[in-house]
Amino acid sequence: TALIYSPALNGPFLFDDLPFIIHNPWLEGKIDFDSILKSSRGQLTRFIGFLTLAVNYRLSGLETFGYHFFNLLVHGVVSFLIWQLFRVILAKERDGEVIAFAAVALFAVHPLQTQAVSYISQRFTVLATLFYIVAAIFYLKARLKSDVSEKRMCFIGMIFFGVLGLFTKETILTLPLSIILLEIFVIRDKRPRIGAGIATFAAFAGIFLLTFSWRKFVSMLGEPLPSESFP
Image 1 (spheres, one colour):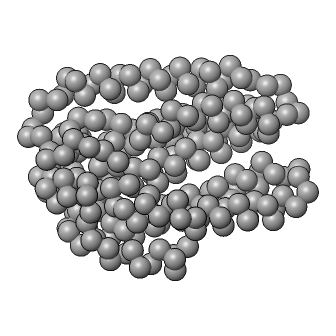
Image 2: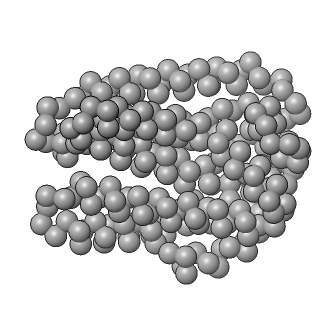
């Protein structure tokens, strides 16, 4: 994966990279909640992504290598976690290990990942995917463990990373649907808890609506960025 994407490590800033990074005055200041919020124009659903951009800016300024390296690193971690998730899902299947490895290999190098990995401003996608997969793994572990305290910690982990994903990109809202599918197709020998997926969806939808409403109240914060678009 690193070899395939290595040519993009020194790629230039493109499209939304310009307003998000080069022409974003709030990245130049100190890294705090107010600055990051203004940097994202009050859009809390992209807060984590802009926080990582601010850290990148602090470490390497406008040198693109650090930004691309971060995207590639997150993609590598996501690929590894998907492999682990597939191993659990396919544990009882014949040739499950082979299928899991083949699936994640296809995911890691598939051309569809090119934009998310090579385009700096698309790190919102790879970060949200990271939190999505970690949350799904925690849920699966919670359902498969027998110890009550371990179950509780795994459920807390699922909620924590789910919320992080919600503050990264809106695609995390499909996580409850994935939880329902895990109950139906993976946790087949245990009592199904479809209500858990519905409850999770309701909670995430409520948080999302609150963050969307919040932007209305902070729309007057600071000077607007040159671009209104988000990846």
